Structure formats: C-alpha cells, structure tokens
Amino acid sequence: MDDVRPDPPSRSRFAPTSITVWGIRRPLVTRVALAFAHAVGSETFWFEIAARDAPVDPDEVAELRTLDSRHAFWVEPADIAPDARRGRPEHWTILSGLEDDPETPALVNLMKMPPRLRSLLLEHDPTRPAASVVLSNTDRAAQYYAAEAGTLSEAISVMNRLGFTFIATTGRVPRPNVRDFELVFEVVPEGDGRTGTVVCHSGDPALDPAFREGARSPLPAFLEGLRPAFPRSTQGAP
Image 1: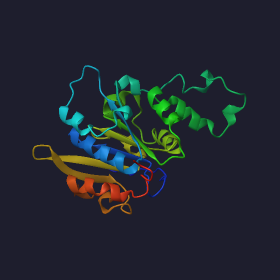
Image 2: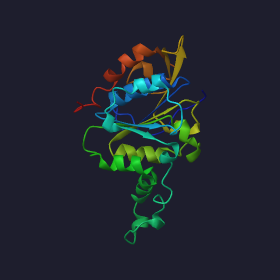
Image 3: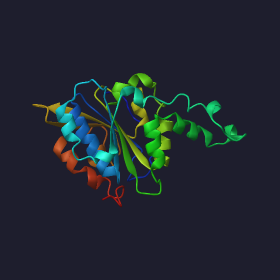
Image 4: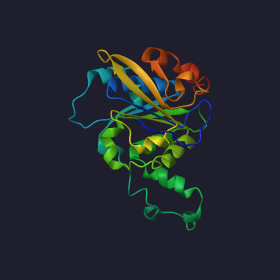
C-alpha cells in the first residue's frame, strides 16, 4: 500500500487516537482489532456491520466470543450512515449566537454521527480511563462516507474528546481517508489462513518496534506484545 501516513495529533503516548486494521481474511483482522481494543481501552464497544441476510463467517464470530454481550452490537450498513438531518444546525433548537461558537463544529460532527454510535459516545464518562469503540467491516458501509483524506479526522477528534480510541476494520484495501488514522496495520494470512503476518503501514516505533512503518511481525508475537505497548491506557480496566 502506498503512502498512508496520517496527520492527526496523538491523544497521548499511551492512548492512540485511532487505529485501522485491514486484510482479506476477516477473522484474522477481527482478532487483531479486538486485541488492540482490549489493550488500549478499559472497556470495548464493538459494532459489527453486516446485512441482515448476509452469510455469517463462523470463524469471525468465534473471534468475538470474549466480548461482553452488552457491548456488542450487530448493525446493518445503513444503520452506520451519518445522521444527515441532525448534523445540520438549521434543524436544531438552539440559542441565538451558537453559530459563532468555536465549539459548534465539534458539536456538528457529533450530531452527524450514526444515532447508536452517538448515544454510546454521550453515555460514556470522559473522565474515566479511555475506552475503545470498534466499527468492524467498515467497507460494507463505505458508500455512506467520502473517501478523501481528511474526511474522518474531525469525527475521530470528537471521539477522542469523549474518551474513546476509534478502531476501524475493513476487508479491502483502505481508501485515502486511512491517512486520518494514527496507526495502520495490514494482516496478511498464511497457510490455511489461521495465522499470518502483521504489517505496519503507519505507526509509532516509540510505542513498540512492531509499530515501525514497514515492520513485519508474526501474528502470535504481535498480539503478545500489544498490552505491554500501552501500559497506562487501561488503568482501571477490570
């Protein structure tokens, strides 16, 4: 994959703003994304994007067995589309002058988010340790979002301010907006597809040598090193 270096500010050395994991073998991608979510967040909230009548990959479902069922949501692609109406200030009941408030753009981006995601973000206490929110298989909802770089950065910033690291997975080569993510990894399957190699396309080697751009790590070793790479991000985690 060509240049995918993002340009977002890091939340902190121990809690990345955002992570993308991609690859053609979705169960492996899910395994890595879930390991990231547990490593960087005190809680994990997972949105699995799939059409109601789509075939279910039992291997992918098996990877999610460690999730708290109260934090796992199966959503149709259309359910993850932006809330176009609420994202337009002219539809709000607001006090005069709010249109000039410097916080209004952030509020617009929050209100524009899919309703179920927005509700989750607003219910979280941002003073608690960082949580992780995962949108899995985002390629299934790609038609609802622009592909250009920079189109996700403001939404990611809002999620960070509300106490979340944003993680996205896709089963296809990412679009140009992958540059909005701080960490980008590809999972390349090997053999029978039950294991593989994790390739870093954009990262921070100060966190871990495996996060150096171009680094290639065997999947088991990569997963084993994730939690030590984020020693403070899960303080208070159960």
